[in-house]
Image (cartoon, rainbow, N blue to C red; front, side, top):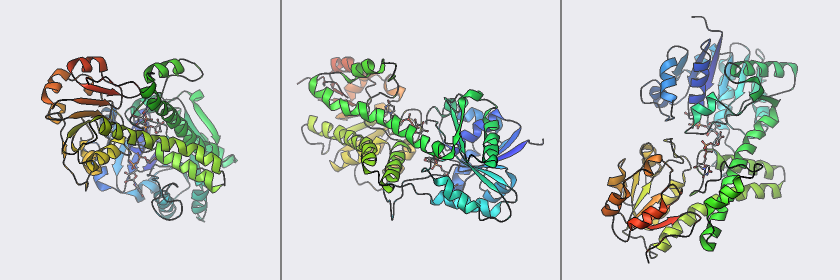
Length: 457
Ligand code: UDX
Ligand code: UDX
């Protein structure tokens, strides 16, 4: 079959993989090639054991793989064949030199741009899919414009999908944002990208803008979302002290239609590859331009998040008689949120490390994320066990700490769990997903977030 267009994507991660799978699924007239330098990842994309767990992803990939969706490590051929190249390589926080710990490290992005320059055999549209600092397109354009043969247009098309709901977010997005230079050729290239999404997204949901707005809007959206979580989390200690109930507050506040009820769930702290990285990146840009007050404002969101993780551990320590040495704590969940195997920046990592420092014995249970958990805790010296079976995890445990809001944890037999644990038995519910009153009646000492504890002594 002759394809109408060939689209390539460099980077087959949590963003590139699912996004391209949906484009291929919705646009059978296009050929979509996803490339990555990591051969193991590509092998898994070509197997029945995909490297990314997302509800609905397996089914879509199975339907289109080898028809119009291809995974490969051959970056050169993909660049040559495609008219449109999405780049969704990672843009982690820089770990060295100027801006270390804050700025985005664009080395992979720059390498991708140089690969495009090196292998291109015709004009191309290059699409920023990764979240990048505002003004990145300028740097990319400068690299690409050194070509004396071909013309490249750089477009910003940030991805707003959330993990765990990626497929649904891609199929039914709130909006698609496409930014370009406002030159005739920029607008023409932008329209090419609009055309792709028009295959399944209503036109009024496709927003076009200037390229800097598009780059900055993505950072701003993530900062706003994270800010809501830090705002609600910042109220949890006050609730625990005063007897107010954070769920009642979230409900009362969220029913104001101006505020809305989403993203007001208290937690052990937000995780994921984006929020912290993007806020640090935003902070860095502000500082770079001398906007120190603005930088401090956004940075507080991350600081409150760190505080919340530390507070969770301190509470466990204090409530369990100020010593955790030799006590077994079952961590319920390691993923940064439910329905994903992703553990990047998961609060679980900090919490596990701090508990091990207190010489607690950990047994970690998670239905999807144990493979990543083991990698995250590699080299941590302490007694750590992993099991997919929560009943196994709680055997002789002194406490349970709920870290991830997996549905599975709501429906366990807590009478049985209580009988398997050492007494007094503690539950610290870092997600407020359990029935606290019932647990208390069974015999547990229960510590919800942002509510007074239910204790037997
Ligand atoms: C990442 C960032 O976290 C996110 O902010 C950004 O919007 C998109 O990139 P994600 O897809 O979740 O999102 O990252 P990751 O799963 O690490 O995938 C990136 C992929 O790019 C990896 O598979 C990596 O091997 C690949 N890569 C990296 C290349 O193919 N070439 C490179 O030069 C560097
Ligand atoms: C986020 C953005 O939602 C998405 O638009 C962007 O493209 C990437 O970053 P993601 O990190 O995948 O997506 O998940 P998200 O659902 O936003 O959750 C992030 C973290 O916040 C998780 O640890 C989650 O548990 C936590 N969270 C979320 C809360 O603690 N409370 C809430 O009310 C919502």
